[in-house]
Length: 552
Ligand SMILES: [Zn+2]
Image 1 (cartoon, rainbow, N blue to C red):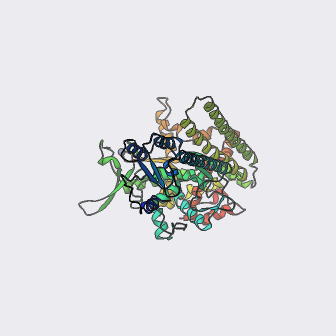
Image 2: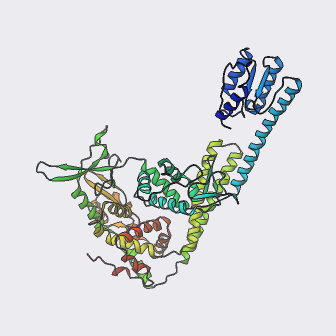
Image 3: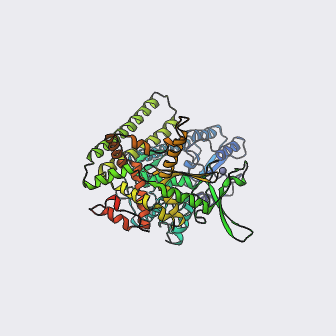
């Protein structure tokens, strides 16, 4: 019963009585379960001082549901400082029998509170153990009252999944998604009794994106539990979403306004490189890229670079990016043999992943040992454990995925297409696509002293860089030192490998998680620009590598 209606009832109770003077009204919204309620203390203080000699309340259990408060009231009655009490729902008489009854009511209230919370706790524990989140299911799911489980709410499940898809595509920020789902989809929250049917709050969207529930987990009191509900995302998708969310909090330049905005970092200070339009006296407009630290102190003194020059350097890089020739030769050979047996790769991979799962499990049990021997503080233990639990979920998922997936040459084919088409695509693509192309082909693009530094990502090699190194090596033969770039390209490493080692290395490469992820990203790009190129791959008959040439 609300405080308002309780006080109305009390007004009605004392309406006809003339011999009662109200000294003070106390309203306390603290639960009576625990001692230490400031207003209650104040009220008893006034009675002890002799300011009043009675209490009027809704029910005795409003006064005392813990053993201390009840005891204090009875004691005041015994001392004669408290003479009378009136309740809306109970009649008290100041006699030994009345005090006895009051004691029982106080005791019963306490018992009721205790057993209620015990029952609730027991219920929650058993729900969690069975993998069901004990409270309200998040949007996209519904609590099934009949079975006590959590089931999919099809309409909202689909919508939330689409929101995650937007986030995972990496092209929208959360505020952008928040606007889009309202303005374009007209998405409204689920209707529940008196709430819902309105625009989703932005904070709710953040909460959704942060909730591991959608990846099959239950976060309860700071710990992760395995859920039994149908997950919306894989664990790795959820992890990716978390990474993307983390990124949005760091300042970044407007992406759409300049072709290469937000791609590069300053090689000197590490901040983002941003673009600016400038008009010269001649009236011609130029676009300059410069470090974002020019307005802050200490200033970064890196010179700005004109867009044309920047693009030229990037094109040169793209021109030189290829898959190493030795890989291509091996690849063409394998394709010619058509069905090559990659089952040994599959086997080795499965073994490797199983070992990873075991290792994390062992770490978990070691951690528990440490806790048991009290060598770890509670919160440290909890933090470490949830980290390991997440890791375990991830490696288990990888292992399961690898079991179902046939290791194929497809990723290699896709990356080859990218290396051949990148420069051509870059010449006409929009800003977003340009960024994805660079993302696939190189890591950490930076600019220093008006020179772009693009390091080809594995397994690509940058032939320009390679030849530069060779030239450099010729010059430096006299001083007999290793050129600094010798380690940065793995072409030489591959070139020096024996045939057997080389083949083993390649087989592990085509099964490598990061390599496959890169290829998946690349596939998305091809689908957007030249989907017909993927046909050759999907066909049973695979086009030999050499026939895929540039047709500008
Ligand atoms: Zn800088």
